[in-house]
Image (cartoon, rainbow over all chains, first blue to last red):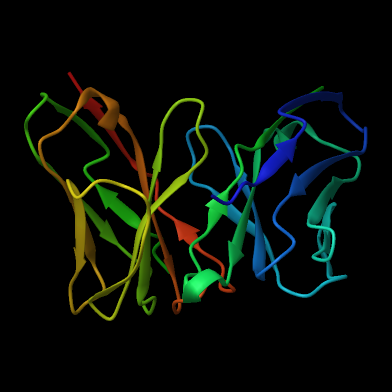
Length: 114
Length: 114
């Protein structure tokens, strides 16, 4: 059974703080790693899809890195704003038996206080 | 471009009944995946459809089934509902199968089984 772990489970920061969270996944049979942002009462929104070891992606104040050899990805938010408050999900897909289904972590819930 | 739509948004059913949920993907997207989220759990993969064929299936009992139509719209069906089926059901569409593509999620159907 594939296990995708995210830490911390929740995080409270002040506006302007920079923060980061971790996603750990199996280091074998890697295919892709996704990051999503899920605001309350909205749909999950795709942030990044990463496929190559060493990948770094950036969207505004949010960036992510990927290490497939050791099985982790970091998501960074620079200068957090209250509108960044959301649950951040990572999802791993592997190549076991040709199946590419996404396995999601339970998410990191970020609260940014003004 | 219209987003992914799901109907109905909320549903209350009784144990033993069956239910059908509908998902219309973004125009041009041909792959549709379904997920279940229950309290305390991450998103659990149910199935993925492409070209009217089920490509992948998650670890759910046979009471959960789905299908995809020629216009890429998808339905999922749950028969003989149990209390534990109460959950948020999300569908997501992508351009093509294979999990290196971003998935675009709908707003979900909140199913309550009493």
